[in-house]
Amino acid sequence: MIVLGVETSCDDTAAAVLADGKLASSVVSSQDEVHGPYGGIVPELASRQHVANIMAVVQAALERAGTRVGDVEGIAVTCGPGLIGSLLVGLCAAKGIALTNRIPLVGVNHLEGHLLAIFLEHPVEFPYLALLVSGGHTSLYLAERLGCYRRIGATRDDAAGEAFDKAAKMLGLGFPGGRIIDQLAKRGDSSAIRFPRALVRGGKSDFSFSGLKTALREHLRRERGLGFDATAVVAGRALLREEDLTDVAASFQEAVVDMLVGPTVQAAATLGVPRVVVSGGVSANSRLRLRMVEEGERRGLEVHFPSPKFCTDNAAMIAYAGAQRLERNERDDLSLNAVASLPL
Ligand code: KG4
Ligand code: ZN
Image (cartoon, rainbow, N blue to C red; front, top):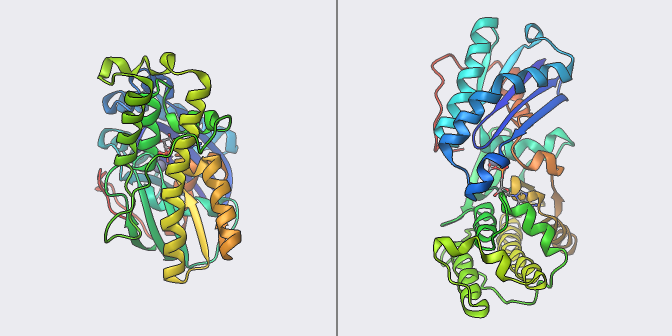
């Protein structure tokens, strides 16, 4: 079965072709340059960029796969959660292609896409504990079988990726900040600054990152004498020496990683699940990957990460998740709608 995947839930315009379960193409058009100057995603600009890019991205995915639209046997499109304006662009494009070419359509939950991204590269046995860490989500799910996911815990405030992005903004770095902090941290001392690790009372599998963000702001104000009104933020980088910046990045990253690894391995032990799959944009973080693997080896836990290109948003994971449903003859009709807060 040839499946076209379409993903526009946030700021990446993506399309992919999956042929008989094998990835034939995956195209991602990033909007980082558009949102970079704002230090975060501007929803209205994201929708407009999707409108400008979507058909060219779909066309590129078909061409790279050596396929014509007439050969496509199913279309899988992200219908939530995400930015409503962004979601609607991909959804309307997918519906249009499905209607004019009489191709079956299926809506896919973006989070399920992330949870199944690992299968693009190799199979993993169920059940597994999934740590989903992205710009919008930080949650633990017990994946019992295909289509059956139980939420075990979630962030009480910011998502881990959001914490990285806000920290980068405070430090006057670019957007998205996770990747930049990851790179800077490689040259820094992670024990230079002892940032607090939040423990969520009564929620052993929950996360919290807003206190860490405040601690970073206070650290910069106190130790470096930086004032943090909105206009001073962009000056942060110029006011920090290179070695201070790398130490702050490494120490901040270490705190985020500690707060992700701890509850995850604890939940795996409590549930008696022998394997963990980490997914979402933050799972591209090199320190998180290393620490999870080390912790897995120590505790006899299998740990799986998708390749970085399948950690961040992409349509290959949507095509994969949709293909599973299309193969079971599940279909959505043209009344399929986008839902910003679609639960998994
Ligand atoms: O999954 P994703 O592409 O989009 C959402 O669904 O949110 O995740 C984007 C997030 C951003 O917050 C970005 O800073 C973060 O993933 N990210 C990273 C790294 N690469 C991307 N965070 C830490 N280290 C990285 N290497
Ligand atoms: Zn995502």
